[in-house]
Image (cartoon, rainbow, N blue to C red):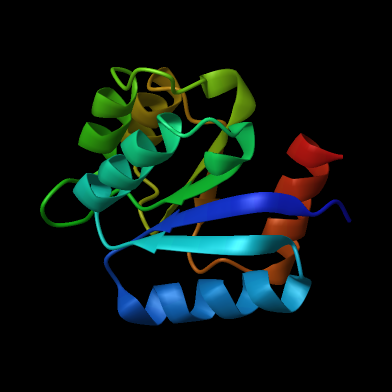
Length: 135
């Protein structure tokens, strides 16, 4: 399976982050796993990396929760579209959530999300995502 330079996990739940981190690290998919507790932290990280001169600075995969305090996934996706230097074509965004609401699915697709994955992240769902978008 192809290795990804950097993955960004955006979720406020520590248990979910622990499980996702374990799965990603065990799969050996990336050299760099970044974690943000909410959309605001994730945007700050991405803005910083978009100003870097290296194209590998921006994560190739973003795993995003929808329901978070401070800034939720919907607002994150809206603001992300305004970040100078962010190239949607070079980043895969997958919503990782417990929400099965069809309105949520439709809304995130309109905001540029590539995949919708039910929590918790599993080895199988991660492998399918990687095979579909990175192989």
